[in-house]
Length: 282
Length: 261
Image 1 (cartoon, rainbow over the protein chains, first blue to last red):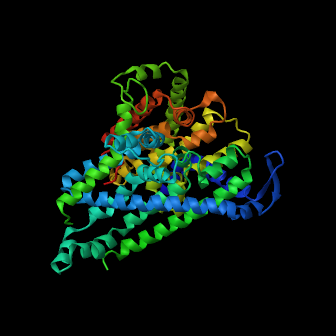
Image 2 (cartoon, rainbow over the protein chains, first blue to last red):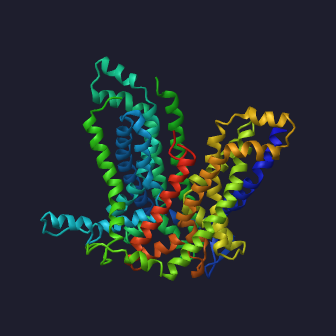
């Protein structure tokens, strides 16, 4: 009885999700195995050509490059985010929610706006160059905007609050007596951190890292705006196949590989989380 | 956990500087009389005035409002029912959980191209309505998550009492559960509304090529890419302030559910 009511309540939403999420995603999966038509349409004959093309060095290189940039962004965001979460968790308990709220707040402002803010800061006549000139630096300054560095900065900036949130959860639950016990038994501060605190909060760090990586590798806005079209990431490649090159089957094949890479990382993260929740007290 | 107070303070100051300086610079420059994104030439509100005369921006804002309102309406309705339906179930279906969780983790670009292909191959004409259909997908998942969080601490014996006293399911929903859930539903709706107002990628792919169906984020994107004008700073600031206000409101309605415990 209860389950029938439940089904009745869930049906409209589940139907919506099926029609506008599951079916379109399955469509992408099948599109990848068709040929591109002569005039950009789709020819419905089976082929593995699109998937073979993805591992062609030209395109595999873009994947590797994207993974490198996403990995770098995830690493930097994890280190900064973990440190920030650690610092918040060390505050008096009643102040923590407010500080956390303000650390997350920028995350809720518009992604394009946050990215645009870095164009303002990094451009040739931007604030950072102005600051260097103001401090008396006369020499040649390297271009900052439209570089790989700018893209990494933008990704770190946009996703940092997420890592802070992910790391704060386990850090705030940490029993302070365990760290005290460690130091009472003679461990130095660093050893306590490395051997006790870090392992017990590792799941948060892993979650943060994986999400930044996954969100970054398929990103096309940040490379387009802060990379200035200087180089392509996977997201831009997908974008181009669908909106300019008009090769949907190939675009679908790239997306398929992209989804596979993301799923791999998300599964790894679930694995770490499941182990971590049981292994923290060993 | 003991860490030197000076160390934690230094970390916090640096992180908050990193998070807030770029935004603050933008806000400051939106009042810049000269309109250059770099050289400060005095305080002025004139770009705020000129923004409200820009027809492209006004139309984009209007489109965004329509998309956000309509998609929030459907997402709130469907998301709330979904949340209640999932929570009164005794069995936890792994498939249903995955289905509900998916819209929040699927990368925007994947959902965007999937929807574009779907709409094109099924001969949907692209426009604001296809953006609305698409926005409901992720919005309902977020509403559902917020309402479910509230349902976890809901006292089900109240609903059972209502049923025992002879109320039908709809009456119980409307008279007993809805009043209790209202703050969470409003918070979920505000969250959905904000997400929809800010959403760029899916709108960009599913709005079609007509200039009549450009939303505000699409307008911002094209302004950043093709010719930065002083108005963009103003627009950026207004959009940002708007999201922050709605989310702070959402937070007030539903203490803690948006930033975790």
